Each structure stands twice: as structure tokens, then as C-alpha cells.
Image (tube, rainbow, N blue to C red):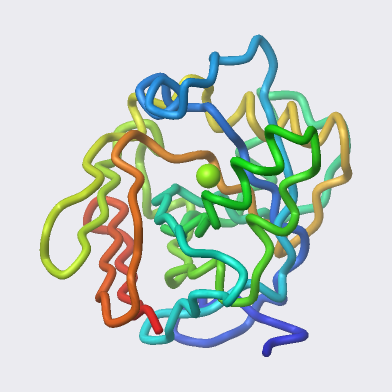
Length: 220
Ligand code: MG
């Protein structure tokens, strides 16, 4: 259990995690595999900071689910606070980037969708937000040209590029900050490409954001 998780930057856990805003249906092929339409506006939901774990730790399959899925995502880490941030000024609010998993109890999410209930249970279990060390934005020339991939037990399951993201990072920061003030340590998980699938106890999961961010977690 982690009540005050922090992000690893430069080898030190030196940024407290704030809000975790997750985006849905931001890659066309993933929306298609979920039989979900691509929305006109950005679809967002929240994941609790208590779900954060780090490289080398373990996703725990909760007792309430029999179908826990991986979703590999690029995470945007906010560095400067802002509300109603214009897209043209978004870059000055971004501290850096990481690779993260939006771990999802797919069976519970499916039930929630059918009943019109929120996704908080399906998305909010402890350990459901593994995240890598944060790479400063200045080290990444173009966040829209990064390979994004995930392998389970060495087998590639998700392989895409942030070039397929339907929105720019600047537009995402603008859209989210038009709803809620963004604060240092807030994370925006920008959605997953196609290829999501089940995790099982004993699996080893490797996620990569190009050559910049690496994350390895186990499943128990
Ligand atoms: Mg997701």
C-alpha cells in the first residue's frame, strides 16, 4: 500500500504524484478492438495515486476480477501549474514523459459500461498504475514520434507509435486543464494503442517508450 507515492526523476523519488488523469479512445485501432466509437471530444477518467508502483514491483491481480488487462501508455508529467492552458503554452507546463500501464480489470469495466456505472473500481485497484522513471521533456525532441510497446514474457503484445495518437500532447494538456487545474506531479496517461490483453500471475511485463523509458513489472 502506498499513500504518498512519488515519481522517480534522475534516479531519485523526488516528485509526489498528484492526480492521474487517463484518456480513453485516443488510438483508433484500440477503440475499434473495444467496439467503442472515437469520441468527438477527449474522454477522460481518474485513477488514484495509490495505484502507483515502480519498476521492479508487482501488479497484484485483485480477488474481484478474473480478467486483468495491460494497456501501455505514454504518460505526460506536469511540472508547472495551470488552468485553461492554451495549447501554444502547454510545453512550458510539462516536466517530462514516462511509460505507464493503465492496468484494467476488463470484466469489471465491461459490467460498469453495461450498467452505466463509473470505471473507478475497474481502474483503481492498488498496483494498477506502474510507471517508469520520468525523462525530462527537453530530452525528447518529439513526443509524437515515439515507439510505444509492451511485451509479456518476452512476447510482443502491443507495438505502436505515438504518431498514431489522435490528439497532440499540447491539445491534451489544453483540454484537461480546461476542466481541472493541473499541478506539479499530475500525470496524464494518454491512452493505449491496440493489442490489449490479459495478464496472469507469474507474468513478466516489459513496457517501453522508445529508447527513453523502460519499465519491467511482474504479476502476482
Ligand atoms: Mg487506458
